[in-house]
Image: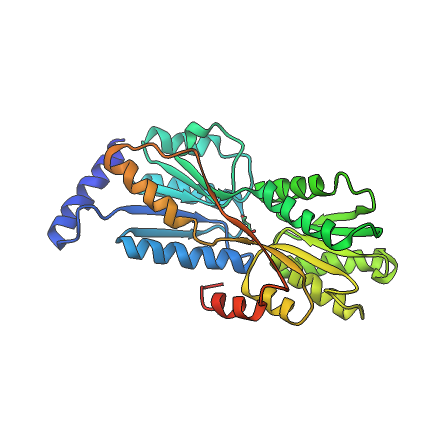
Length: 319
Ligand code: GYE
């Protein structure tokens, strides 16, 4: 607490001297990396939201490594920041570093992923309902396939991350009462296009050239775009020979839809920071406690939703 107080005193007097509002906050942001177009957009929007509010954002990119995130959080604590945002790459291993922040009375807000730890270690989590996202994706496939037999291959997100765990769960719930649709292969593509393509190539090789694959369920659009490239290189038609359903609603999946190469995506907003900063300012002002979970919307888009218009609307948002 002493460190934070000393840092605050310095910052406060500096603010007064510079004439900057005494309200301006310093917030540390431990970002996972830039593994996907969606994550790049989240970073862009977070910086814009901070700018709008006059918040001094200290940004740290962890290159998808938890140890780098923990190091960054410890650095923010040492700097005596007013608050910390973290997008936790995996769901476990956060207790001790979050306890250190709690002892310094530095509020922590989780963005876009949940953790398996006591919720008194963070102020709130701003995320989608990832089980619901998987269910929406699965329900779309069930409706599209009907009673036909369908072998699905699954490209999972980062192993141990809450979206990978939950999106798998939700998709399986949707398929539970439809024995004609089966997940025959499932492997992580780590939320990246490169890995998504590599894993899809291995699935195609393992499944006799891909003739028996009816659909791809990818936990994010970037892996779906990688899979689409692999399917085309194998001489098959993505979007018709092999249906493509994924999550995020990034611009490039709408381009693929417009070309008939993708079928459905579940939208995830990149603006988690707006709600986070709103509740943080209220909390720092008068200790207003936010709910432990601020849920963002999930919306299904298909090729029937004028994909090129959606692409145009999204293409300059920082993906
Ligand atoms: O779907 C993916 C990113 O944590 C929900 O992480 C987020 C996921 C998102 O790599 O594109």
